Amino acid sequence: MEPNNAPATLGYVSNDGHFFSCRNPVVMQQAFHVIFVADRSSSMSLTDRQPLRNTPASDRIIQRSNNRFGAVLSSLYGFWSARAAAVAGRQSARRDSYSIILFDRSVVDAVVNDFSSSPDQLLDVVLRHNTSVGTNFTAAIQRAQLVMEQHWSTERTPVVIFLSDGECPIENQTVQDLCRAAVHLGKALSFHSVSFGQNLYSATLRTMFQIALEIQNNAPRDALAPAAVPSSYTTALDTVQLAETFLGIAESLTKPRGALIH
Image (cartoon, rainbow, N blue to C red; front, side, top):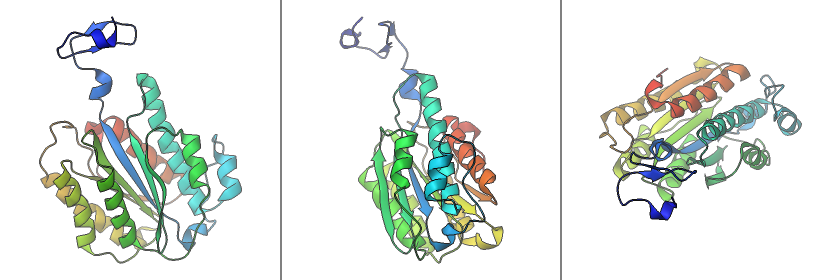
């Protein structure tokens, strides 16, 4: 059967031409706009933590950023690869979109609302960027809100993964504005703050998570995506823990009901 000749009722036509009266399981799979917000301040140039070794991307990352920032890029690559493998297992096209915001005292949009780039292509883009001076959480969160709003889709749940190795003052209102904007547009934000370093310097990141989780828990349920991905806070002391954190978030998007709050 040709897809255009399918009966006018609930159902779908498979790749081999069979009509099924149930909803397409690929369409039912929850999709996300994942906005990565990563610190690239001068402390990220320290070499006490380095990229993962023995991965397909290790050599490229080590050549450009053999430091904390490179460790972050390793974890991003692992996240993208895990999501790509999940899509390949369903034999479907990627429905997630990715945005990557890098910040120091200012912000740069490395990738915005990308649907098609492979993990290697995404890595090539972020490898063009180096560490710089300063840290501005406020500018980073405000840019994340702008990107989320400008590229809003009712088909995709917004997810922000915010990573830093330090602290920076930010008003609670700034984080509240981001989270409430998502609720106003129709879907609660899933916010994941990741502290890459000692827990001593992560009070701000923990507060950001607590604000986001409270707003998420009090938001109306999304009928199109009833399986929520709870916001989370995680401390990663080294490169391996950081990679595990990102893989855990990727897994929580694949199986939303199994998400954990740290």
